[in-house]
Length: 196
Image 1 (cartoon, rainbow, N blue to C red):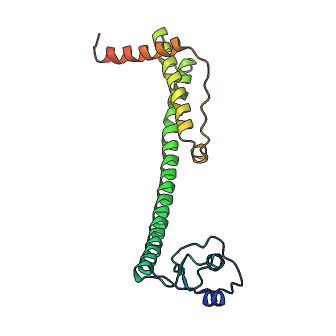
Image 2: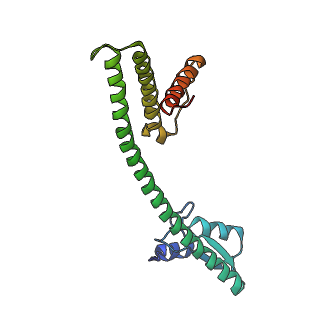
Image 3: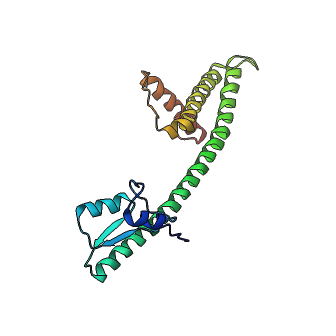
């Protein structure tokens, strides 16, 4: 990591401080500024911090104290760089997720819409006459494909997911009808596997 030292015109002409810096940031364009002074007053500390210093040490000080503060601020600088790299990686992963969801939405919606459309065509008698059993199965296929399509549309609506405004809209329905549909699906699967 390349670090450029910008001493802001010799630290604002040795804290004459022509302009204030609110909430100074540690980043790789600027080393942390540690003010070492014999003036330990609250005003001196506040002036240094307002002018952009990150920390303050009063004289006399021990080498250990100064070394610790320098080490601490350099460690914070490294952590900032690591956080920035992690943030960049997370943004990249988020973009990849959005691309995936977009492709998945397209690839899932089209076949489900086709199943729904073909079942409507068959139910409407537009192809050939169908028996009562076939009509019931087609109605089941049509209803399930509608439910799946609604679910896919809800789950894959990226704009809603990204905004965090996914809402649940409960509706009144027939539990008996839902259970009958599920029992019928299970019966058909059991018949195919010859399970009684």
